[in-house]
Image (cartoon, rainbow, N blue to C red; front, side, top):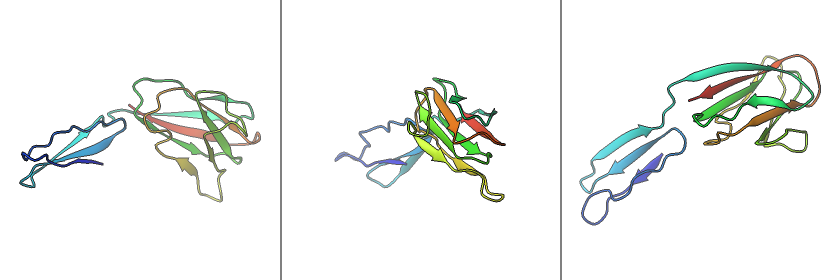
Length: 135
């Protein structure tokens, strides 16, 4: 959340620059607050990508994407990369394999990033990536 305080004349002189969904609070000299939520997503799209040991597209580039969540339901770790080919050594994040009945998720994958996200599992097996993209 961004907070903008008043200037000497009691008016907020700045605006919030928001690149991912968040709240902005403007405070006047009298203590009044104005809260706005900018760029809040209005659509969530769920897709599934099957486990593979070769780099594959998890999320295509999308200029309208505000955030995303990637969950790994597979029995092997999932490695994701931003803007290039994912590998066990070229990665942005590692989403662990399922442990018992616990599914691992990476929320707000790369805030504000609208480019290609690829993924690769450490080995073949069973399971998927379940992705929710918010626009």
